[in-house]
Image (cartoon, rainbow, N blue to C red):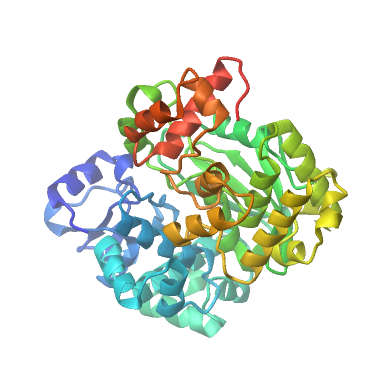
Length: 477
């Protein structure tokens, strides 16, 4: 990734938030690298070096700034195919830091060769995948050491270092400090919940996103109340809860202490759900007048892929309210109990393995028709067996083909799942009633033609059309 040094320095001097997460500034006189928004005394241009990722800055020998904290920089969305694959692999790294990741497993997950993955990482992050993984682990450990009171041994495991000795050795080698040097004296106690701030690029229309989620919550699993989003959490064998509210310039997230060892996966799920890596200015530029009344409108993602897919199947050809009712029954019948601070939030949505063991008659007892019950089971079996991946790291063409090949899944359901579970910004659920209504009930052919002008952000165009319909007092899809 080539950077214009003069433009990058101008952004650094101006503390331009548009460059946050896109550029990192290494200062040769101090050996420190910063975000463009850092408020330290601006160094001379001659001692500054610019990098496309924190990993590239660290590979060049710089240490992270303790003031602007590069680990808190927002991520990036992608437009072209290469960037999409690179970001997908990077997302898998962030979600699975505690696991034994290899270039081989990463390449297989995104459906490309190891050589191509290495080439993509060099092009988009300036480093090899192994260097990127090491930096992400170091920065995640740094964040946990700074923001939580978790024992250092737990932090070492959660960040993928395997042992306290491994964490200490990595910090001494790369940061020239002991992990204990980052421990604060006023960090939150574990029993109070684990607190994190997740950055985004402004503008961010949090109220509309929260309203969208509120209209689609699954009873017992999710709720929106008091200006915040809450949900139960199931990650592997771990169960717990989270809550999200809007802070000053970031989302404030609180996780139950029971999720300490799976923090990366949970925070990655929150970033997906709230579309925190979006580039709202690029979307606004592409959509023009359509986006102008609603700056910062986001594309709601999915915290859990199979949950989103089941919800999409249940919502076929019925109202949003009816789909919520069926999803609540499904969770109550087949989910498992979870303790949370809220009495009416007490169920974890069943995982793919559990759903795959059900029979269509069991699901049918909830008022769900037979062919949809069979489709839900087939989807879950494919996910449980690893034949289908419902997350942004999945190979897009193959996944779309797999979905549409399943009896009962047509283009609308395929693209709705792609919009949310796969976070595909160019998904287009053709034939959607709400979209057609917002366009004046034009023909399908005319709608396709109008949507061509909004590539590669057609999914965002769908959200704006749904929002405009809601503002007109009509029913949304």
